[in-house]
Each structure stands twice: as C-alpha cells, then as structure tokens.
Length: 240
Ligand code: UDP
Image (cartoon, rainbow, N blue to C red; front, top):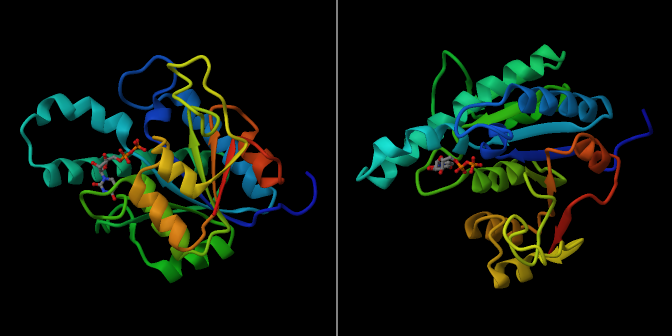
C-alpha cells in the first residue's frame, strides 16, 4: 500500500438501494455487500478511520405496499428498523473479511447493538474498529442522509462520502438524460439552489452550517473508495 491516506476519519453513507445490486427488487445482493466489505477493508488498511451510516430503502421497499394509509411517523420507524437489518448484514460482511466492528443504534436494542454514544464511537474509531450507525437519527421525518451529516459532524469527520449508484452530481438525472454532465466539484449552495436530488435539504443545510465537505461517488465501482482515501478526485466534491 501507499503512504498515509489523505483523509483520516471518514463518515461513509451507503444507500440501502445500492444493496439491491442489478437484479433485485428488495433484499440484499450478496456480491454487492461482499464487494463493499472488501473495499472498506482496503480503506481501513490504508489507515482510514471509517464510520458508516447505512440506508434502508432495499428492505423498506419490500413492505411499502402493506403500508398504504399508514401514519408517516409509524412508517418512518419501520424504515429505521430496516437500516438495522442492513447494518447487521454489513457488520457480518465486514467481520468476514477480518475487520473489527461495532454497531451502534439510535433506537435502543441492547441485545444486538450498542446505543449511540458519541464518545464511545470515537474511541472505537481510534482503535481501528469500523463503527456502523444504524436506525438513522432515531427520529421520524428524517433520512439516513441527514443521519450521515449529523453523525459525521459529531465524530468530527474530515468529510462525508456518499456512496451511491451514480458517480457524483450531474446537471440532470444521468439514468434518464443522456446529455447529463457530471460536476467535478460544486459549491453546496449551488446544489441547494438547483435543488439537485442528490442529498436532501436537511442534510445539506446541516453540512453548510459547519462547512462539512462532501463527496458523492459510485460505490459500485471497485477501488473508488480506496482511491478517494488516497486523495484521488473521484465523483463530485461538494465544497462550501
Ligand atoms: N428514517 C427516518 N429517520 C432517520 C433515518 C431514516 O425516519 O433518521 C426512515 C425513513 O422512512 C427513510 C427510511 O428510514 O425513508 C430508510 O432510510 P433512507 O430512505 O434514507 O435509506 P436509503 O434511501 O439510503 O436506502
């Protein structure tokens, strides 16, 4: 491996939807989660401290048809539980590649996860453990993007990386518009002004208040994460 990483402490947001892989409508694709684990292992081996917030869309979607007419808050709590299923799956995948991990939950479930304790999370990171934050923020009406922004700020991450299925911020949805062009970098205020649907406004404004840098990238491309850790300009950098 090469020298010291350009970024030491990173908050990595992984979408639940990306865990679907190419063929699934809901659930977890084994290959995707294994590839993620290997890539995260390489990043840790390079010296990065990694905390992960994982989404729940892949599980949540499979039950949404049964949720018509449900109160928003009730459905959101189900969504937060979905992130715990992914968190536990990711924890297992990470341990299978030899990493030490801790899962912390924003909703108490003491038999399977530690409660979220900021100082404890930081201590785990200092010891080289990968910390997975499950249950989002613990509050309905929020998203896991907002949880990523919040936890990233709390642990004093150098930057928040959002690993998705597209390689950054585009002028339009690249999955629908062929002429869509990728920004190599973009000011966060411009993202807010253009209302680009890459991250929700609550998450973005949280980042803005503390000038937290962000990077949006394709987590489906092997080596992207490690290249970013080594200081390469992958995806889109969002600055303030
Ligand atoms: N959620 C919530 N509060 C949070 C985080 C998540 O209520 O702090 C719920 C919300 O319903 C959300 C769902 O959990 O839709 C799953 O998270 P998200 O959609 O952000 O996951 P992703 O799109 O990344 O798969």
